[in-house]
Image (cartoon, helix red, strand yellow):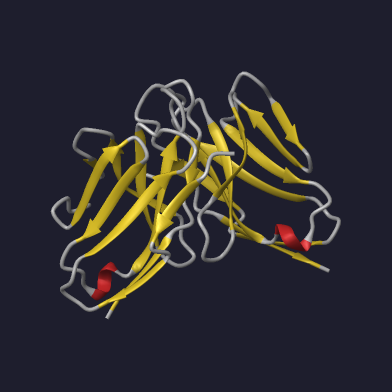
Length: 117
Length: 113
């Protein structure tokens, strides 16, 4: 099956610093990648949709200047949490859509645990 | 507005039993319904998916039943095993759009010995 990786798997940072999370599709090209946030014992909350070569589309209530998304290639998308604060601590998960618009399968990465002190 | 309702919130099943998780949706434009399995500290993994042109799909011990008129679909796990203990999410999306998944709230399944 399609494999999606994330790096780092876990990061601890001081308040005010920026953190970059990478999402890679390892064995397929992903024109669309998605970024989610998940709080403990809750469902996944979509933050933004990332399309290769274009600006990301953010969901309502998500600060685009705080959560910078770059989708520079068909296999890589990055999420940068700028000036992180303790309330940004969460589990961040990316997914990549395999194929074109007729194939809707999303494959998820293993997630990145962010802890802001 | 929650578009996909999932129940139960938690479920305890004995080993060898059948686990049943239900989801109901509101948006009739949804045409793709996947189920994901998530273990603690891991990302969700695609388990099985169905489109509304069929009423049932089976893969190994996992079966999706789909009722288009009732706008409901369910996941059945036959011969449940302790290794199946995880959180299960149903989801729905619309083909041809941004393919954004709308997730249910999740069901924590515990399979006891």
